[in-house]
Image (cartoon, rainbow, N blue to C red; front, side, top):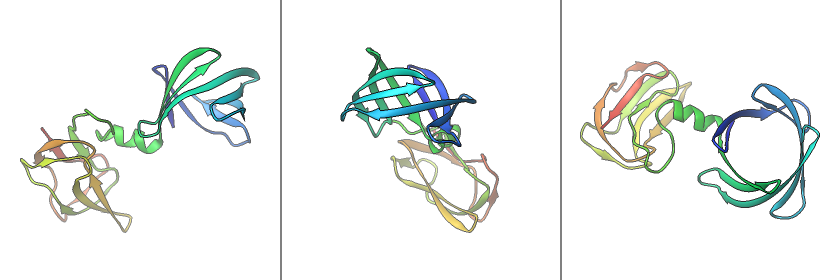
Length: 166
C-alpha cells in the first residue's frame, strides 16, 4: 500500500509480527489505542502521538486528522489502486483516460466499444480471459474511444495497450 502523508509518498505493509509494519523498507512498531470514536493514542517506534480524526472520505480513501495538534491529510492507495494507476486507469473525478492496458496476459474474448463511441465511468470496454477466468475491464472515467488496438480472439501481453481514448 501507499500513503500520501501531506504529499509525501510512503510505502507500507503489515509486518510479520504483531504491531509491526514495514514503512519504506524499514521495520517499525505501532500500537493504536482507541480512546473515543474520533480520538486515538498512537505509539510509533516508542514515541507517543495524540491523534484526533477530523474527517474520513471513504470514497476518496482520504483521512484528515490532527496529529499532536497539527492538521494532517493522508491519502491511501491500495495495491490495486497503484496497479490501475500504472495502467492509466487511475480512479478519480476529472481524470482524463488516455488508454486501457492489459492488467495481465490473456485472450481477448470481446471488444464492447468502437472508435468514436463516448463512454462513461463503469461502461464495459473489453472482456479478457486470463487464468481461465473472464475479466471485464471497465471505464474509470468519461472519454471518447480513439482506437481499438486489439481484436477478438487475439492473445495479448501484460501492459499491452487495448484501447486508446481522445
